[in-house]
Length: 226
Image (tube, rainbow, N blue to C red; front, side, top):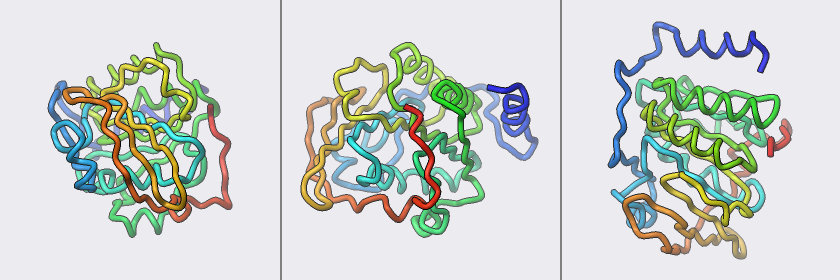
């Protein structure tokens, strides 16, 4: 990453109007309600596992994967910390996110120049202590990079969400939660809980998710970094 970009991100995270934890801690049972009661019932603690990484594996973009986490992002955006999106496949559509309850004044959008830049930015944001959630689309990620992201999320008490290809299902991962979205006809999806720290994996849940078409401005596309 160019030195100027590095300095810009660091200066942003150091701004005096940004709240920073004095001493980041790990919260083993920190949970974030998903906004979907049926999903909360199968997630340990009744919600997404905070201060950790959640992997959402899917085949193709726009299946409803972003809509799966938007209620939680809306809740977190009303805190004093940032919600950061890193290298999304399309530009998020601000009016639609706002209509879903996301406070746009707490939303940051970062575009890396490649996978390495995106992973670096994700790790820095997770570790900073200033971000409630960091959402990234890194594509295929080596195991050592996943471990760094998990440790960064714990250190910064931040929830990291990685949208990754469905063929990553068999890859071992240190993420606290892993969900595979299996598609069916129409808006019907099947969520398979592959891994859940503190819970029992293997749950499958039929789920109706509207496509993400309204949450992205598809007239302004960005290539996937994976």
